[in-house]
Image 1 (cartoon, rainbow, N blue to C red):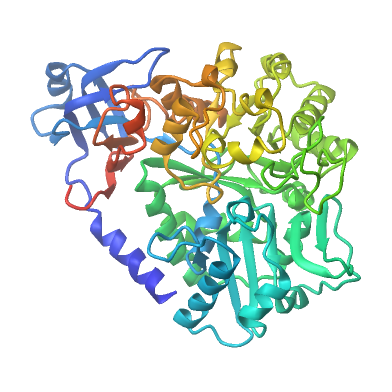
Image 2: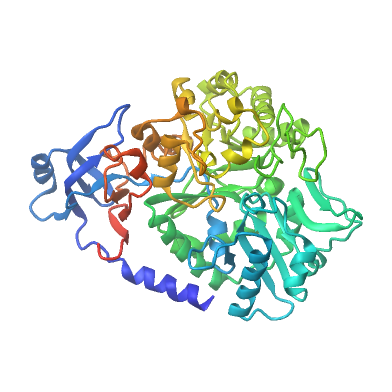
Length: 561
């Protein structure tokens, strides 16, 4: 935790403030993202954190005046700052104190023994005492040759006297050892909450794997760091977003216990990035009872955006809800299995009605087509129509069917897609579903043709927060084995960039505030070393961020830039 605080302080000191409020940006391609086709201008003028002029350089100099500062791009490309359509900002804060299996400085985890070794080495390196908690992130059982979850017994063999929790990268499952299960008061006699699963061994004992809502029981038992450590982790987290060109972040499922901290004065004072919170529906009654709650309004750089519902699980974990069966069956081997909803139709409708009646925005996680059907039924029951401009968001919409486009258009749904699935899990999906089903995951091209306003996201920490990699997956749709999932759904670079800028801005009612370079909007920019519109597809993922500017001030620069 001391290292987190030190890093946060150094990051803050490393970013100089602009000496002048009026700045001319020139000297490289400036892609405005304003309109249905690419538009590039010579110069942009910003004043007091807003865009004042967009056009040719002569006009910019006349508009700015003689005393304006010049920001020369030196041939680099400037775009509007990226708008995060869906990730978990608070998870990035929490990861700072745990074992991140994606850390490139660590030996790779290639099987269960190497996973055990990584946990053992982490305990030794951090000198975690007996009784302490060990939290492991970015675990993926499907990436292991054993093709199964690590077990409670195998974690006990690492350190039975520490509480070990291994979080699946989907955040829809975890595996806990015996000490952690005991801390959460879970025994062999325990039953999972509605929508959850406890996996068991052949003797009926808990094997440590907790899925969906059952995982929340363990997460609720895990200790929280104090406010000083959380604020230091917040500084590190927002710098990680800035380092990838994001000027707007999302906390895609703010837990009730975290909401007071995330909306408190200390966070508002520290935040430089805009942060939209999606309070988790489990805390809905408390939100409804609070007369001071305001959705859609910034206080500093943080706002409550809408209420998050989770209708199903993750397809790679075989907990997504489908109208067809998984070929491999359920996570515990049962057949037939098409997943199940985390909420009943009646429970979702009752809660969503309370949200809709308050005028709050509804965000519904739905991966499988049956879960998407459930969202559509509920929106129709609430009488939501596109002309109402309520903009309900279906997060992931991963296995959407073609016939569901018309309902999205009628209701005014914004699909928040997740094209990284094509790289990370399309090969896994093909072990469960036919080619034509997998080829239609995250159907961005067809959705845009159907008149929908789309976005694309990382769902961090499910996949890395890297917009250029996301752009590449939307354009290439290829897996590590070289299989292309739906070549007809590949999009061009401009469409892919719209899903990182204008699309997510619209989905949060901020299309007149961010996502484009246009007079009157926030001076939020990202400067890239190459122009995505002219870079070959195979090189898109290698484009690097040189600088990020929030409201006219540099908040992050690449070393040496």
